[in-house]
Structure formats: structure tokens, C-alpha cells
Image 1 (cartoon, one colour):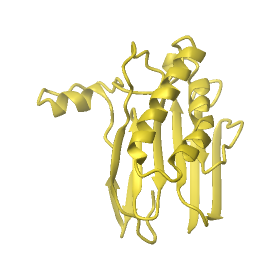
Image 2 (tube, rainbow, N blue to C red):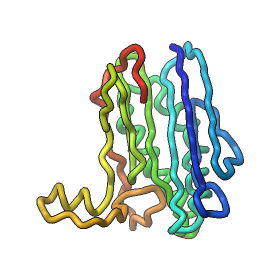
Image 3 (cartoon, rainbow, N blue to C red):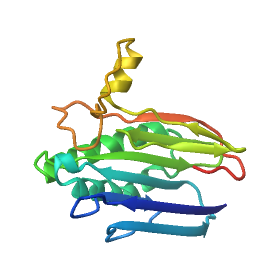
Image 4 (tube, rainbow, N blue to C red):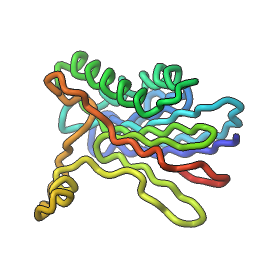
Length: 196
């Protein structure tokens, strides 16, 4: 399976870039100001696992949190390989990474996440926060994740939405023992020329 990818990040007015990327074992290091990363690979083995992590600058240590999440993806790929329940592995992974971020950054690091797992017969998306995943197929763009923000939550509850994009879920939340569970979309089937 030929996979082509492109990643672009911009650090804005921050001193360090707080974004991280993982694509099937590749983690570009030392992302600086405006950075681009592209790749092409012919994969003979599935699953293919990728993730984008947007460190939250307002929480402090967003770069540390996004890097911890990216570094943990090889472990996730090993756990997913051969399992029939990818969603459960993604939930366990997110909970473990959340605890690790909270412990390593004294509750001061946070990151959003969008993970994609490509299998023979399905594509699984998992996300926390407002890092979005899209599927482009036959010239149409479909939004396959839903932001975890107060505004979206209020709208779903039938309440007047505020223009508040405060996150309701992300990695690095001090959850007091509760599991931080990503939203999972496993309803997509891969087709030739899909763009994710």
C-alpha cells in the first residue's frame, strides 16, 4: 500500500513548537518555527498508525505533553497489531498516556490528539480535543471527528452555544482516577485514493 503524507506546523508566537507527529515509526525531531515534513512509503504490513499532537501552550509544557504522546505511539502500534478490538486498545493507550503526562509534568502539560489506524478493511480515528481528522474521498471532504469543546457540548445538549472553545477533553487532564476516553470513529472503510 503506497502512502504519501504531508505535515505542516507553525509555532506562532511561542518560543518552541509544541506540535508533534508520528507516522508509523517516524517522529520528526526538533520542529521549529514553520516546519514542513513530507514522506512517501510503500507499506507491506498493516496496521499503519499515525498521530498528530497539538501541545497546549496555555497549559505550559505543551511541547513535553505532545512529545510524550508521540513517543508512545510505537507501543500503541505493537498493541494494535493482531488485535480485533482496536477501539479498546486506543482507549487504554489514551488513559495510560494521560496518566504519564500528568505525572511527568506535575499537571502542567497538555495536548490534543488525532490518531488514525489503517487496517485491511477499515480506518479507525481516535481523538481528544479539537485536533480534527478529515476524510477526502471522490472530491468530497468529510469531517470524521467532533471537537471536544464547551461550545459543541452545549449545542449537543440543546443549549445556546457560547463562542467558547474551551476544551472538555485532552491528554494531560487531571482526571481524579477517571478514564480520559477518546472519541472513536471506526465506521470508515478504506478506498483507493482516500486522503486522511
